[in-house]
Image (cartoon, rainbow, N blue to C red):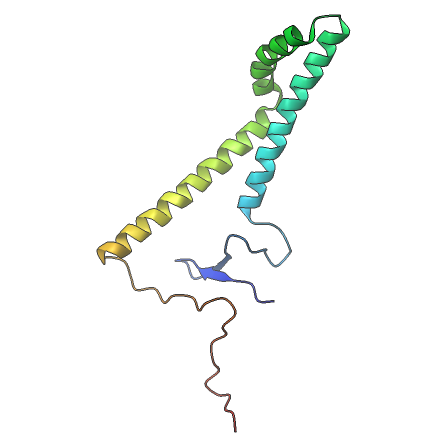
Length: 134
């Protein structure tokens, strides 16, 4: 299976989104999704633990949930700060990539961008000029 890659201005090739790298790692977009999922699960877990502790002290469930929400919000910012910073950095990186792609598209639409040869459609290989069918 051939990995789709695009060439960067420096001449190196980078894997496109949705592809895997040579070592089988997911691209940064996959890591961002994982970080967001982990942060969300961690915050809900903290909420459940706090509510559970309050219920053990015979606080009514609805009151325990309300108190746990109020306490878990600021507490999770402190406890999970490292994970929160990773999510924020990943989102900022993704936003910068999107704005760069948008600017490139606008430049192409204005006719100011360098002509870029489009990739062949998936599944179609470029014909080899040296290979002839006899």
